[in-house]
Image (cartoon, rainbow, N blue to C red; front, side, top):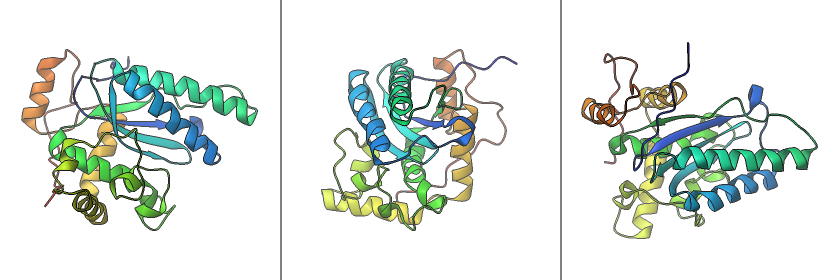
Length: 232
């Protein structure tokens, strides 16, 4: 069966997962992590992509981003992917592919899924038992949103600004969201939607997406999840 074209639309958040080939490591040390972030910081603004969140794990990475054009995100992933593979292969004396095929991605409804996806991304190292809490992991966007450092290449989404009227209130509010986590059902919905390429949201959101593209946005009408994530 032919693969469906990737679902990308302008001005909507996209959750992206890219894995190493055969789950092999794609980051060996600090310099590798820093290089991928530098490539994202360089190419994202040039291609009109607002990067909201990220996590770089040993053999994969997640991004949450909103492109201003339909081709902005694919072009970003192509530029970053090619540039990083050249760097990684040259630096580590290897050749050949690094990625497990093409990246996986999906569109998500901004409310309530965007903040749930940010928390899901920043908790990835905790779920994987790499660190005991999100603050202990250097290579994620948590440190930026919790006020531990300033990642200038990140663009906070509108929902983040609604967490408080001051930087301290927003940082504390986000830390509270991460401590609360996401439910197992929301976690499963975010993972499955991204890996399979089906959009994630309520009926009205999905219907509006379907009107904007000839590509099917959902597998079926039955059993679509409604996030239980709350900012309250």
